[in-house]
Length: 401
Figure 1 (cartoon, one colour):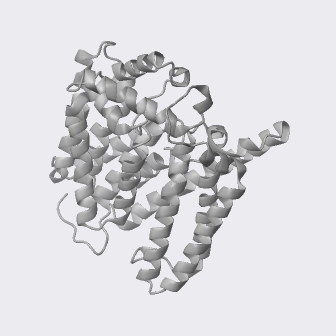
Figure 2 (figure 1 turned 120 degrees about the horizontal axis):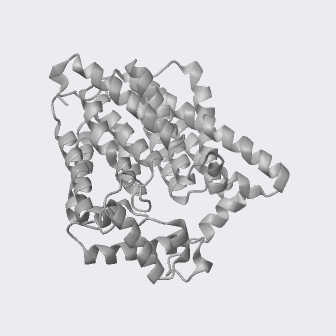
Figure 3 (figure 1 turned 180 degrees about the vertical axis):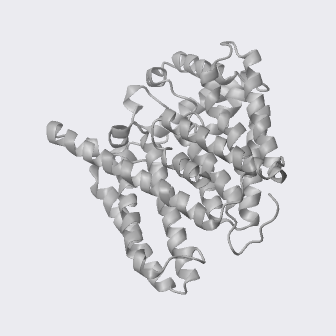
């Protein structure tokens, strides 16, 4: 039952928030009941303590939030209260269970992408606009953000390559061709989803993993050839896929000048980052509160005549700044401590999967407010904690959690 609840939790991450919320409630309930059988598991790990204090501090910001307390603004952050606790007290999962969860997520992501492509093909037949196969047009077919969906595809590629080509107990060779084709399909989706950041991260990850696979299996020449093919194909695809090429070409480092720069993601982000920094200077210690931070940012966007940000109700598009606007330097300090503890475990045990998803999160958080949408928050927190508590590579030596 525990594995079933875990599969439901990961497979529903790309779906509507309410579906995933019920799946998480199911998992937390089952996990708690399993832990009750072994009271010795009820030990408060340092990471659980830090994450719990972080959530409590976010709750306390309601006392100085000009707009008062609103549970819907706080409920998303509840993942920091429940997931670390439950994942730390359940029985340690075997590596095959962790692999099953990663595969379940990759399958769910792939099914979602197929549905998006089918719906886009239907729209193309009626409208004749090729852009329906790209970016938010494509991901929006399943009410997803293109960056979220491409992040799911990227990590799915990493996990499939790891468990079939790197892990000491990897399956036999006959199934590897299917895995390679699966990864190629997911790479194509990353390109179609047109997130410049995720395309770059995916190519960098592919370079590292292919070289590592070649080194580990003593087939470095084959690995380099595969690497050149992948990078070359990705480069040609970017140049030939007009929309993807256009997405890169419109990105310039300059000040936001109005509607003319609405497609220049960098110019937009610079404006949002400066707005967030201005707010932090005004209330550096306690921040504006979970609800007040959103309202304060919108007011700043109005002052700067950033109509796109006002209409779309944009956040800071930087999780470090967003956290500081919400909870001040105290909240930022707790958030940083949480990440540092995960990083220490990742590098101490040479936990490749934890290192990759942590670095993915750290980089993506520079340009996205990753905790402002449940589909992204749960994805990163769940899998980072899963690898933190339940996956220590065979080369390491597992210690008490």
